[in-house]
Length: 319
Length: 213
Image 1 (cartoon, rainbow over the protein chains, first blue to last red):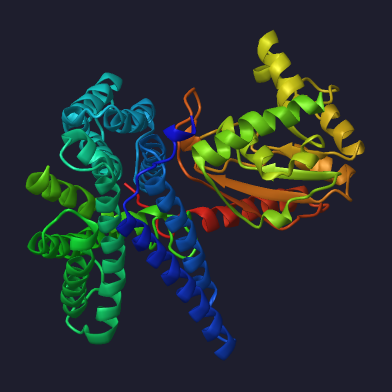
Image 2: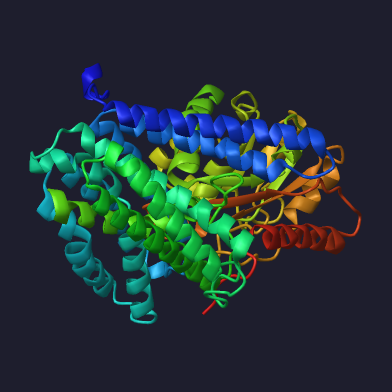
């Protein structure tokens, strides 16, 4: 019974990777405590909340890696549920589509179920083909045509970003199992590689932007993003991928570098695309679920792009 | 049967509101924990009462009761049993003849030192549109002047489960609790004050610049 929930064979590099992340968090906490002592008059609350939320995120993420397939699928399905709910709460849904929205929610357990039974073919077309075609059909049966196109398209957009894209994270976890061509533990390493690089890429882009950035890259969407930040961040991520990739994943050095570049560039795009959505709706944060960060979409924005792109990159090259 | 109400809150109201929907609440500390007190809230959905229940600590629940329309909830014996025995509503007769006292149950509850939940718009209405405040609240607050009137605004529930819908669809819900209001002689001023307070709370919970058609 317990074996259904715990993953017995975790590669040593992955355990070391998780340990390093844990140490980084402790260092961050200590730094804040020190800064707070030096400058007690400044408001450190947001930074403190941000780090405290990181502990939760890292803890739950580590649990999905250390745990079994079933546990990981459950957690990621829950993450998709929260992200989809946040997206719908922000977007202008029509009252007439009430039941359709319920159907859209029901696609979440199905999408993760296909992964659970290793049915790759269904997993990859369920939302882009079946949900895409069936939900508008259900809307037509209701018969409200005013705002139809916008309602149907924003619903599909929400599903693609928060369910289809994000479900590629646990898909990575069980990819070696499906293909039977690599040890199962490698899936967890790939997932760790992707998430660690995507998140550190966010941080690197921010820091490089602060240090060097002058020329704005997308002034109307995200005024804080600069060319310097983008290039510096992508370069840092590529370098980091070269350092940890060969040790953590089954990929060669060249492929690790390209993966780092892919994550650096697409992570930036995901961030800016979600920013455009928020700007269109007229909010700064997508929600209040993660204290110090904003909503869950604010944290997952870059992953909506990096997850599917990295998954297909690895799948094409190695599995 | 207050213990049924506690079970209902523990097993239905809290899971539905906190997990299925998801709740953000501002100024929870302003909610009264002892009676007599009157909580007035905007009304868009059957989930309103579940949400309000989910705001209170379990130990207080046995002391909290909502006033609800008798014609609606007592129409069918099964629903009536569920509404009065499990949810614990105080039935209020809408549109009665002169001489009948529709608020008798509410009076008893307040005299008993309970926390009364009242929807002063009288009906669920359109989502996010605040109707006129009815006069019943003025009469009650006038009789129980030591009972504070606490306004609560809930956003997003009409969308999750509106009029005529039966499937609660998940949306994040925002709730804001206002400062305690007190009775005043001038009925119109009192009602207007309450309404203004609810509208002010609404501005707090609505997204900064909502996406409009």
